[in-house]
Image 1 (cartoon, rainbow, N blue to C red):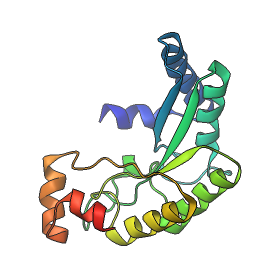
Image 2: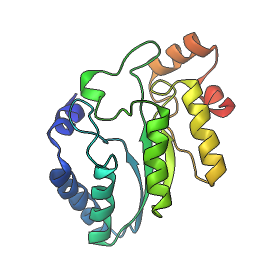
Image 3: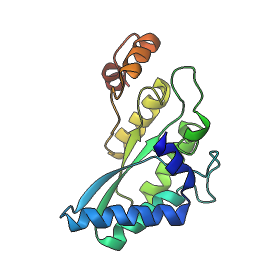
Length: 173
């Protein structure tokens, strides 16, 4: 809930400042590269920015500003769980559908951004979308990253929806 409250206050300028501060601390500690699990994409309420990748550009600019390399793990988040819409406070994370996500990713990829695909979790991404992301990743040689079995509730709900563990659903997709 605290994360949602903070996320609700961020605009592109404050997002840049926060990312720059975090990356600056990392650089001072000797860290030279980070895999950024990037899932704040849109304005409050879920409306895309004029450039749907505006917040990704702020992360990348912040990293370049302090001299740390970023692999942007661009997150797909579509629902609050099986049969559940995303909560209002989660809408900033959600793309309209997997095609909108892949358009955003393709824009980043074709501009040379070092990235990986990150379907948030089996809870937040239905299996057909997982399959589409995996196919895109395979076609373009991109790594996949996810929060696998991140909560006991996710495991229970995944078994109810798929009859399998999140690991099995992810592997099959």
